[in-house]
Length: 387
Image (cartoon, rainbow, N blue to C red):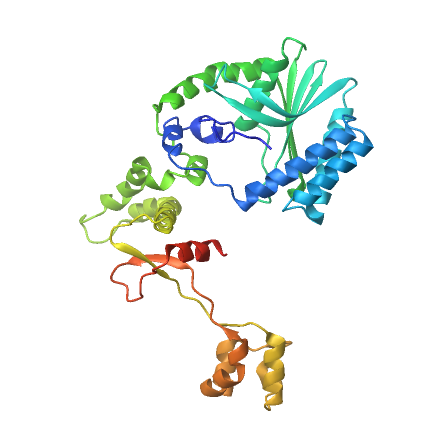
């Protein structure tokens, strides 16, 4: 699994800092979190490496069995799906490897692209070295959206690092980059000439990386930057961009907006909504982390009652004389309809043991809200994370 936690200008965040060199120094102040998704991904990479070591002949069957046994004994996220998906992924890797007449394979190869990016390094899952072609392959285990290898800056930086490591030993003409997402049944490959990669590195990466290292440059806040940057909600340039259109029509005469003004607002509505939602999510996270949001407090969010055991509820109602009228076609009526049919007090009396009103998720509201503030920060965080 790529390990880049200590790289300011990491390959995995290059889609942001190449567009907006101002970001890395700001994002460095936000500690990264090891989520269940990253842990699951790490687990899948570890299993894939063990399988590829065996399939490529780097280890024998006996050692493979031992490594696999040790892995399964300690892997918290291993399951049948991971077994199947890593088998699919490693078969694809071997298919690519065997397509070359003569080649060698490196696994979990640390690559250094610091000739272009200050202190730039990363880990490439698979590096295939052939006579005239260098191929890198990356496993993405998530179930989000398909990722293309074409113009992919993370893969291109890995390719640069691999090229720099092996250029003296091989005469590469072409670079091939492949991304495999087995859970999405997606394989994306692109092939470019070495000269194209080096031109991109010298003329595009190098100047932007130099700016990003010291935190200067233009604010190019494209959709990818705003979607993935942990500091996006706090950025004044994004706020200014969205506030311009709101402020422009404040106290403007005549009273009604023109058709052109309505069109302009509608054109920007989606972006403005994203900005507001991002600010709200950031403020909630700040509050959950124990930081004060002036004028706001954490309270328990609203929740709905649920019948925890529908079969038992049906049996209870049947025993008390309620039969076909309690059903939708093949389904128990909704709780509100049941309560109206049976009567509120009878409903509460008969089904008390199978009715539950879960605790609401923490929400950030103005201090004037009538709900009591949450006293336990630890409990609020647990509720927020679904523990």
